[in-house]
Image (cartoon, rainbow, N blue to C red; front, side, top):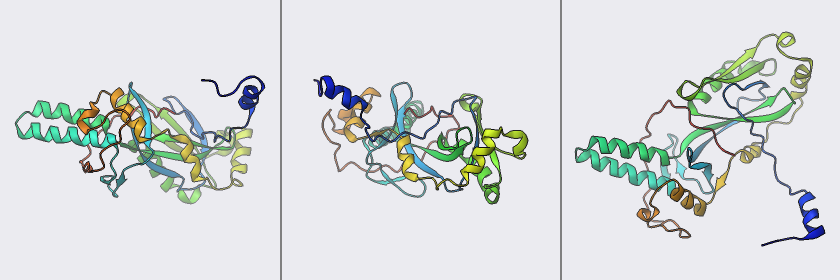
Length: 263
């Protein structure tokens, strides 16, 4: 049960574990950051899994391979297989004329699907260090549009990144601050200047922002989410059948603001 005792336990507790500090920043409604953008390229897309109120958000250790449109082409995760099974049952219910049952199954299937999300990096002018926020596709689209619009002036402009509203009315905005003397404090102006000397953002830092789950944990999470894993030929401690078909399911559009990733 105990791995160290006495002086060894104290030494181990005080030792540098070489753990990478996460650069993710809290970005709840009402949050505002003043930022400098170093590049139009400092962002990544990923597919997030989880179930609000039951399973904290995660990314698979071995993610599914997807095409440019986000459809799975191979290596589906157990969560993808669960979603596929439910979508197939929804199609069968629709064919049988049970539209209400089909709709209920489609909604359930959507809960198990991987949803695209985006991590965007910038320099936080409060401390002059890199930070990252996590955005839904709808939120990211507006932010990326602003970045592209001012792409040639990123070294001259500071921006205000803000999140307002709630639920389906949540809005994320990125607005240029046109007068640095009026809109920034002395410390923020100093950090804006120093940001020009920073090394380019290291994309490896994006990996510190996400919780990674291996297949065994994903199976346990399916049970927690209420899915009968026996329907996939699984049991706790067993691996997913390698012969299970890959999913290629048309995404169901949604404008809802997904719950935040839990880190």
